[in-house]
Image (cartoon, rainbow, N blue to C red; front, side):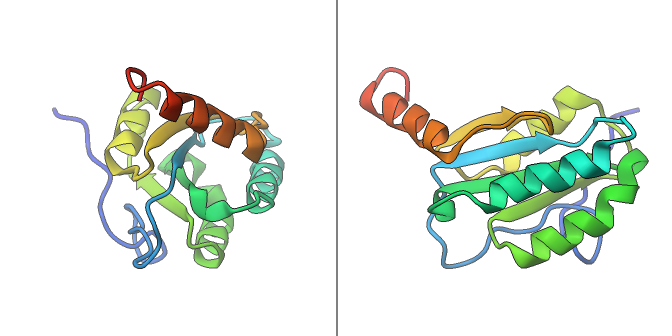
Length: 144
């Protein structure tokens, strides 16, 4: 059987993808964050990770796509609150676990940034690092 795709719709109302906010410029960087860590500290890691993202300066340059699946549905209330509070956060929810690479591929398909970066919950990347990477790629026509 073919793998199930994520449903498309408002992440706050039903599983799927929350649409980009109208009127905002396309972000420079889309961050794909797969929530697949099954450690007991996952909720604390997610809270800390989101806190770091909320402190990014000039956040309109960055879009964050949280990719999650049913086995981790305990994280849904936190994700729903954070997505509702931050128009640059989007949530892609899978009803079944398609595997990490399928989740990344779906994230690539819905990302709207000029560049896409993958992050894990235990990664910490400063805003300056993201924009530095974008500047380097922009300056090298063959790379971008």
